[in-house]
Length: 506
Image (cartoon, rainbow, N blue to C red):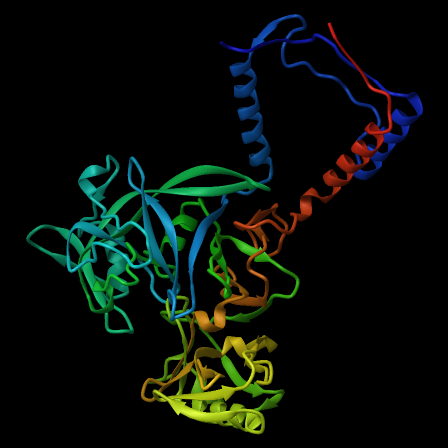
């Protein structure tokens, strides 16, 4: 049965005069509305209107409202699962929807690589099941009506070639790739172009669907840890800034901002927030990205333990010559430090707690036996970056708890020593429980300690002059642009509850 409404039939709400005057004055003052309002009718009086017509009109009006905001790119939100805890999961992952009709794939969140790839239906060495209790899905280009192969003549293939990832075979004119990761694992396959389905945020708790054509990898072979089923996922979502990064592709099409942010929950079952857009939080500090680097390199200047700066040559952290610098990498579970910095770092921590804990070495890691299950007796560590941006680490941001020994808790330093590469890598151990903003347009990275189990405000620009939206799978804060309307609603409800109301339908 189709619902119909008679346009123009009166609905009379009778309120006491004094209350109406006060209510209207309050609304005008708070919102800045004009005191004289003109009624404009969209449909003639006494004409029956189909409900579908009203919905169509609203749909057009909503599009007009969004266009008036002046923002082409939308905030895109991805669900986050997993945890940094290496004894449970050791990675954070999300879901992407690819193809037509769309199918869902679980992919690791990795800011240390550039390309999105998923396992293909004829993949050799790919796991068929996962210890993460998620279904393993294989992408089949022939089952998607919008899929097409990327040819060698396609300029998008040359984007991969610039990063030494792409190659071409003259026999089949097919753009292929080979990736090698820092843990020794690898994958190879070919590039395809297909639709990605996106959940965009259009308001508090409101979302809509969008889609875009992107290039991603179809994995045909996998090696190393990628072949193991205990923590298997369908692929890897590279959030780097090279030409074939999904971030770069979507921002160049005007679909999403040239920025993304994450906030990874460190406790319990993990999870968190991942958005294309910039999380807005007053306590965020920013440091510039080191230019012309393949990863998210930032300039680490010094390390402080309990407020005391360690005697480390700053050149040990620089990305020059054969040194890799300091990299932000969500695809790394722990954290890694160049040998020249690691030794004084561990010595300073050990010296600080030596009177209250028992130091010992376990499996090549510096550990400590602690009578309490809490690491509160350990010092605060500060990583000091360019432009005065410091990343403050609590003990649980650089320590890992292992099995107890004789009733005492065993805490080990989660930073690992790198002897030859001259590189510092800040992985999930350090990045958890923090907002981390990758402002690619501004070529900077920002962070702030935060409860990632609560919602966040997200903007499409760093200046915050665009509309802000609330993102996050958990309840929490309210977007700034709704405050005045919440106040009006509160005033309205307070008055209505005290008034005599008569509703007359005619």
